[in-house]
Each structure stands twice: as C-alpha cells, then as structure tokens.
Image (cartoon, rainbow, N blue to C red):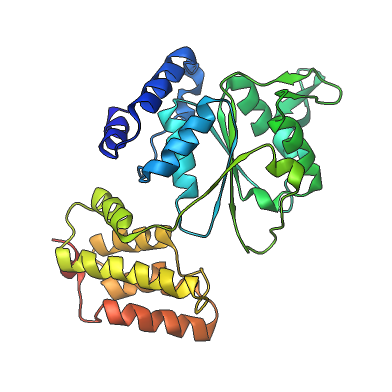
Length: 306
C-alpha cells in the first residue's frame, strides 16, 4: 500500500487529497472477511489531474462515470481508486443478459426456505464496497432501473418482497464505457445525472513509458523506443480512422512483451498481441505494415530485453 501512495506523491497529487483518503480509510476500515476483495492493481495509474478529480468526487460521496476511447486506463483507474481507498471491489461487467436479478440477487431455496441469494450490487451496497460497472452503456432497461435506484442521492434500494437496502456510507460506484462497441447505446439523461463524468485522455508516450518500465525493468533502450513508437503509431492511425481500435490494445501489448521475455521472437509476439486482433484482412495487413516498420523480423528477445 505504501508503494502506491509513494507513486501518487511522486506524481504531485494534492497532499490534502491524500490526507483525506487516509482519513477515509481510517473511518471506514474494511471487514476482515472482505480483505480478499482488496487487491493491489497490476499497474499504478499515472495522471495527476484525472486522479485528483476522481478522488475528490469519491471523497464527497459522488459516483463516477469514466468515458473515452479504448486504452485510456479506465479500468486501471477504477482498480487503483478502490485499492487506495481500501475498499472491497465488486466488478460487474454488463452484457445483453445482465438484468435486475443479476445485480440485486435472486431467490434460492436454502435451509427449507426461500432466501435471497445476494447479487454484487446488493453486497457492494451492504459492505461499503466500490462497485465497478464495466461497459455500463451495454445495460438494458431492466438493469438500468436498478442503477437509477442504486445511484440515487437517497442511497436506498427497494427489493420487492425483501427489506430495503440502505447503502453503506462508504459505498461508491464507478462506471466505465467505451464509444462505439457493438451492443452499446446512449445512456439516458436520468442515469448520467447520477454521475460525475470524467473524459479519460489518451495515453501519451511519457505515461506509456512509465507503465512499461514499471512492468519490465530490463528493457533495452532501442527496444523500448520502438515499442513505444509502435503503440503511438497505432493510436494515431486509430484516431484518424485509418484503422479500428481493435489493434490498439495495451493489454495485448503487455501480454506480447511477456511472451518475448519468455523467449518468443518480438514479431511473433506482437502478431499475437496486436496484429491478429484485427479480423478484417485489409486492416490486418495495414497493422502488420505498421508493426514491420518498428519491429524487424531479425529481432530476437535479446533485442528487447537484456
């Protein structure tokens, strides 16, 4: 935990905000049985202004909606916030089959009686967790009705046939959404009004370098420069609508680099992590051309790491 606070101080995060976060942690200690839901994120979040906006909103009891294009760190920020605030995290991924019972719970037969098997929103509200609504703009009407009640200022959810759920004072919800994904739609005004919205900026080369150096301490300088250049090239092409965002995959890039460290050739690794994410033949050839300008076919793992 001290490492992540050290990283935040090094970024110049407002000391008052960090003090308030520490006070929040002391005021709302997590129950021992929930410690397994408080896990350190794989990556720290880099972005002073965005982190300060998000933390200030959560400290004041507001809920957050993180919007923006792919590979802007929305989920990384959400995971970092839950960890820094010391809250158990409940990840809820929305899809076409997500309904109210998926969120609140459903009836089950136990101990010779019908009982409510609590869903993630119920548990999060009850235990004072941070609920992360991933791809919230895929929520259908049945699920949206639950979100309206959950995010309302009254902080009370009525479950038909059961007691009212009063949200724990520490409970917060963070929604994330990408634009233009298949199955997504516009959020209605009533739902948006329940959030403070942060438009996530695209990752820049400096931030990406810090992330990669944190993950891979043995990067060779030339290898790092070419990997950074590759991602920036893909980001520019996607921003100009020359390619889709399928190849703009930071998780895929990191996964590819892990296989390089295991001994795979950089070109093979990048094909798995980046190129083959495009299923359109023409686009895949374009991405392959971009990769070939940065990653020579003759390179081995020793050209990237050493």
